[in-house]
Length: 71
Image (tube, rainbow, N blue to C red; front, top):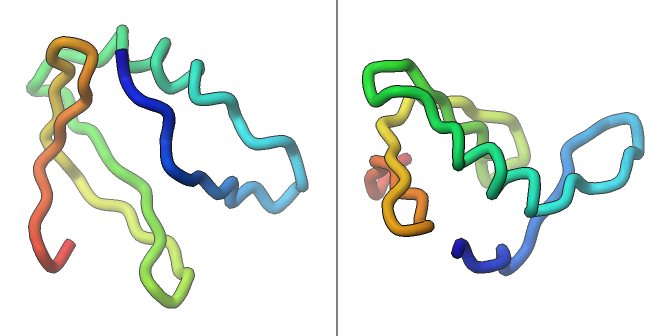
């Protein structure tokens, strides 16, 4: 089972409640095939949004994706 996140921030501009982590766990159960493009959305240190194509896989309840020191 995936651990709970240390912290989370909802970037929703409408003031809705943060989505529960259980939704992430459910979504990970239905990851697409490895050849399906997948993207990770994050924010830069200045708070601006950033999206990058990633390779990812679920294994034994963990979610793994490619990254690097400058990403």
